[in-house]
Length: 86
Image 1 (cartoon, rainbow, N blue to C red):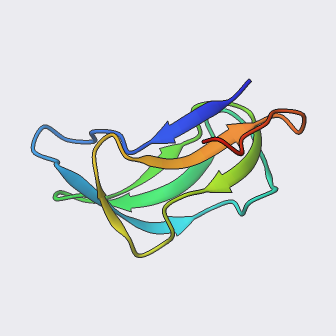
Image 2 (cartoon, rainbow, N blue to C red):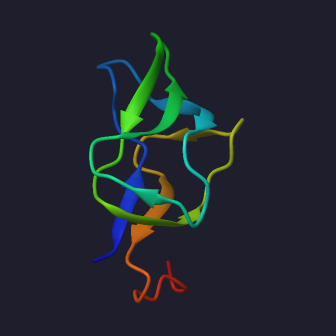
């Protein structure tokens, strides 16, 4: 199953977030709920958990980039899933 990892709203006033650090690299296995990346918001830096288990197949937004809420950050999927169109 393919899971799109989106920039979540982490506070009521947040409009965008800065990707500070990815805890996993493309190709790494990910467990649901484990820290996936750190995001710097208008209030604090937060560890964001993985929304699903699988393989981190694609990182779309690199460390150091700031993007709005709802932006596609990464894709978690199984090894057999086709993520080329995402």
